[in-house]
Image 1 (tube, one colour):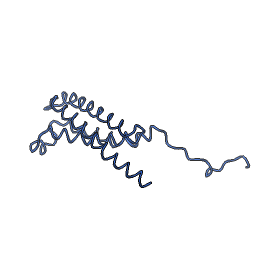
Image 2: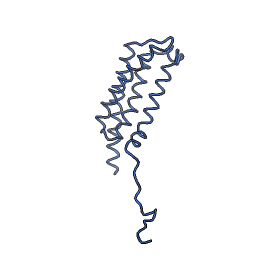
Image 3: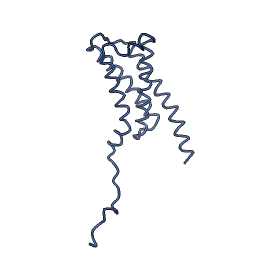
Image 4: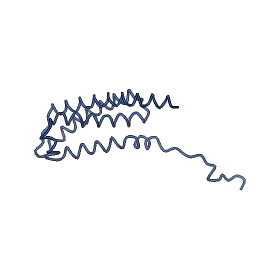
Length: 144
């Protein structure tokens, strides 16, 4: 058995690049699914919507969503600045498709003002994620 290679001697094969991207983007995909599910309800979160502005809820929802998207994209080779810009654009587009989707949900209607709140939240979420992740990455590089 001089030509045989033992199983222990073989190098480990890294997972495919798409698998790594899916791993890092899975939280964002789950969050997008949650947005879609809540948006499909005729009267989502009635306790919250009676106590605060739905525009504020849209802003916070999309700021958190885009922060998660930025975090995921920053780990798949885009770089933090590009990840934040792409995430903000994606958040705005997803907000527009969410408003369109509401046309087909009973007791819901699309509103341009909701999309503006989504887009504003997306921009704020991208900025906040960029600031936090930039500081975190800088600290991580100093510790190395």
